[in-house]
Image (cartoon, rainbow, N blue to C red; front, top):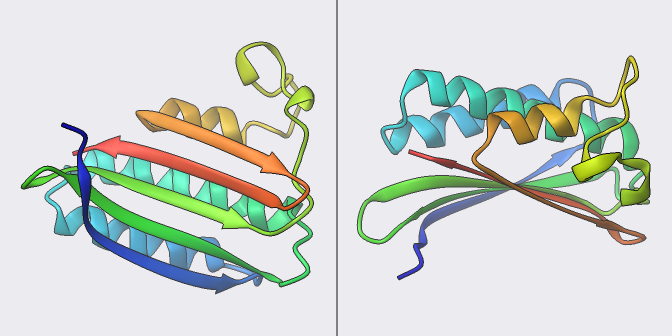
Length: 139
């Protein structure tokens, strides 16, 4: 049986300096509330910062905002934290990523690779209507 959403919080952030830190604090609070270890919380926080920075720096969203959904998943007890970062910007081409979807080596462009290394599951959808990053970390 697939886990269901036990609790969900949706927050819309303005495209403004340090909003990634606000999202990070919310992620930390939700992860703590479900009994996640501090090591895992730290990994979640870094992944959230990276995903939010990507939205802030690259989305060019006309709405000048992005949305973060924090979902606690489980059957009866919390089993995982799923975080979705969504913007309504210009999107990006998956062709710009190398083999297995990894960003080509350069000084920049490590954010998605970092997220994939920190989280248990990552899905990225991007197109003309914006980008959605769905990240999941088991408790």
